[in-house]
Length: 217
Image (cartoon, rainbow, N blue to C red; front, side):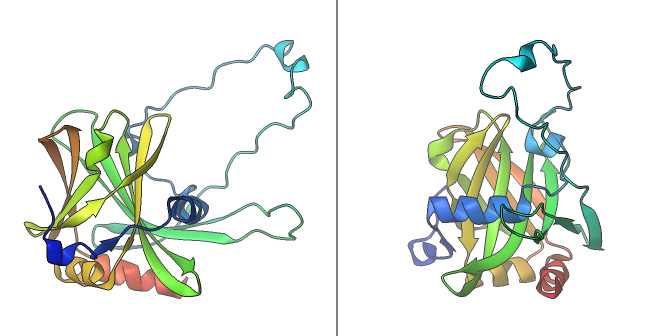
């Protein structure tokens, strides 16, 4: 599936480094369902205390557990969450990360996708970022295709993969946001191989209200 040439600017690809840093800082701690990230819940494995006495990590403090996300509001099929972030080095207090998300699951067991929408600033301009989290093993060159009410809008490029999750991050242009506000359903299509797409349907019910909620936070 290929986007219309007139709509090639609908989803603008931003700098991979800046987009990843912004989206990670604002959304890394959002508590989305594990299955939607292609992750499986696993019990922590015991560590032999003797092993911790050796190597460069011997004197490192244990990693602190991330604060629990707070559900701020629900609008239609969208949830808005916020979480306090730990203070950076030299700072007295951390910031607050907020975002809205919705998870979808295909008919194939264990395959899911989560869309996280966050707002931030880039070069003095307010931007709205789409962060699509798909399971590992997707066909990366194709990216994630986006359709709204059956009409092709564009593609979101994959930027990086971490264990069990591949992320596609891009800035949503105003035309794209307007289509999402007025639309009924959005299909995010991931690919297992060239020409082999799998659609994940997300409801756009409550999208406008949830986006407005982010402006208040």
